[in-house]
Each structure stands twice: as C-alpha cells, then as structure tokens.
Length: 266
Image (cartoon, rainbow, N blue to C red; front, side, top):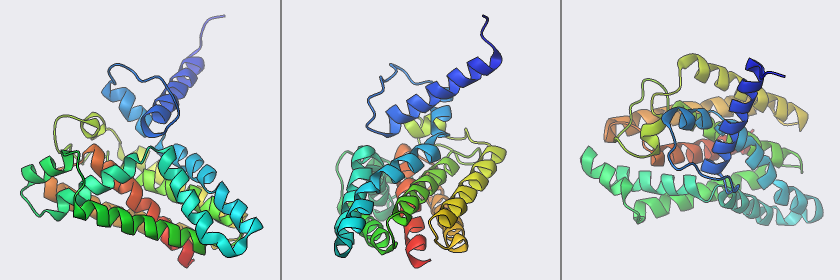
C-alpha cells in the first residue's frame, strides 16, 4: 500500500519530536552527525509540549510529599525542581548563567558574546541561577493541593519554552554565526508563534480550571511572563546583537520562574 502524504507528515512530526527529546532532555535519542537548520527549527517547535510533559512528571514527587507529609511541601518542591533540572541536563540553567555573566559584565557586544561562550560561570551567573531556583522552589511550594502543583509546573515549563520559541522569531537575528542559536534564529513565523501562544494560554486556563485554581490568575500570569520575557529579549538583542543558545536557555528559565510566581500569587 503506497505511503500517503498524511503518513509522511506523521513520520516527520515523530522524527521532529524525537529530535526535540534528544536535544532538550536526557532521553537517549541517537544524535545526528550534523543537524540541519530546518530539522533544528522543527524540533524547537515541540519545546512547549516537551516542557509540559517534563513539568508534570517532575512535579510528581511534590504531589506525593503533599499527600503524605503536607508539612514538608518545601522538600517536595525542591525535589520537583531538581527532577526538572536533571531531566533537561541543566541545559537551560547553564544558558541562564552564561547569559547573566555576559549581560552583567557591561562589556561591548563582542566581549559580552565571548563571556557567554566561555565554559566557566562567573558571579553574575551563580547569583542569577541561585535566585531563580529559589523563586521556583518557593513559588511551587506555595501552590496548594496535590494536583495543582503538577498542573502549575506543567504550565510554567511550557510557557517558559514558549518564550524561547519567541526568541526564534523572524525579526530576531542570531548574535553569532555558529551554535544552536544560529541554526534556529528567524525560523518562527508570526502566525505560528501567535497560534502557539493561544494554544498554550488556553491549555493553562483549562488546567487551572481542572485543578480548581484561578483561571484568570494563571492565564494573566502566563501572559505577563511572556511580556516580561519579550522585554528581556529586546534588551539582550540590544546588548549582544541577537540570540544564542544560551539566550534560549535564559528565556526558558525566566519564563518558567515568572509563571510559577504568578500561579503562587493567584
């Protein structure tokens, strides 16, 4: 029986999802010897979905602790944030640290890019990562119930990765010719980004309703997190000339932390 266009499209989607898992998680997917720009861009579009699944899974320890030992919720929150970091190989945290070092140095764009590309982590990076993780843990521990934290971390992780997807918009150039940022920069169209935003916000509202949380609070929190990440992206573009792989990681972590904070406040 001949292969149909639908079969080919389905196979392409599965391959893109597998690439996304191999690039952004610890899932052992065989790496390609050379990743083509169109394949990297297609994998990037799965980021919000991957984030939602990772966030929900990472929050399971917190849900268990909240059920069996409600007084120890902060311990469960630490476990959840740790699981999410391990599941992503701390890739985004590393990007956040490098971006903070580059921006904190207040150097010229070329020097800032060199600092971001260096393998070591400076004081700006350390402080930024510590504060972000503290915000994650504190906010997650404040989300009540046992199901709500699972939904909250799923929504936050998806929203943070949506912010990274926005970093690959057509109007945002790459800061340097090499690296993952150059592979995917400018690959996301406005209609695609707009549709993904609407779907992610709708999913956040649906999950909030399902767990008895404030639908308005969660959706407004997601939108506010995306706006703040957009402002951060504008600042990064002005300072270093565009996006890099590190900037994508910073957007993921900032978007996640801001969304969790909004869920806690809601």
